[in-house]
Length: 327
Image (cartoon, rainbow, N blue to C red; front, side, top):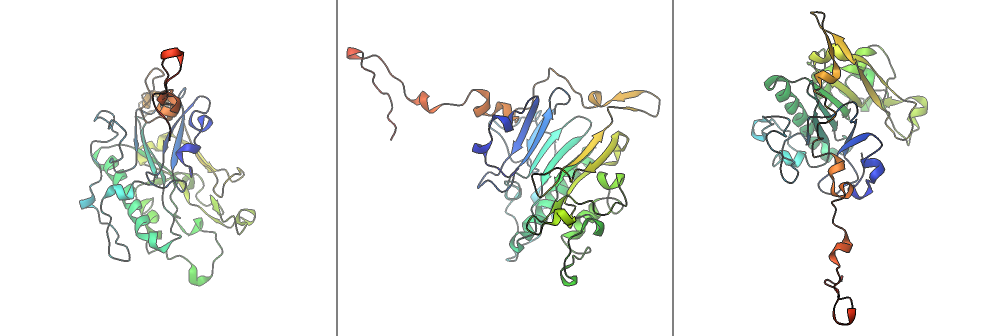
């Protein structure tokens, strides 16, 4: 979501029955940002956080009961990549302030929506790799230490294998899949890693399954593209997976949508049935986490209007007296 907060109107913040959760850069905006829209009549997150580090906090800060995790990545335990000047990140917030991630707790799983940096600028290579490492560490903590199942969705700006790379480039510019950054995702998903590449699992041999095309080269017409957008999940969610695919026919961007369908209900090994809403601890009366856009001042009716700074009182001769003057 490459947008700035003043550009988010009510139609984007509160579309129909959907509630939105949006994260934007804390500095200069318009180049990154992520959003998740949830139909609150079907599903509600129990908890929501901005970022991957646990350091981005609203006012007042999230209480322990509002936080998704008990444990978060620690910068001093991470093996960061140095930039060309041998500089390492000063802290996790430096990697987490561009509005690139949202973390939502849905009970049965934790959903991470992420927009990873591109590698188009050499100077950003170390930043890109360190964001990947931060994402990987957050997922590791959730899975290994907190025993949670996880779904990761979004633009990873990376290909998982050679079959996902369809851009016609000279031999000298072909990517080395055994070097950074290209081996990162390959080693994170099965069979090398533990995460399931959901869309590829449903279409293991499909070639040309790209989600991004260079607009300047008209790559979409000839289907010369890359698969950069993924849905990854942990093994424990496998029984819930119903289907996944790309939607290349949907216009409006140089990327196309990717979707995952989950079963509404599954049958457990003992023969009992379990509904997805029950597993997600859904309640239609439960309040939404306070990071929802419906609680933003500009949409909750609590925003202070400029007119409120100007008051009048009846003075001598009933002449209005301004209490504050704009300059």
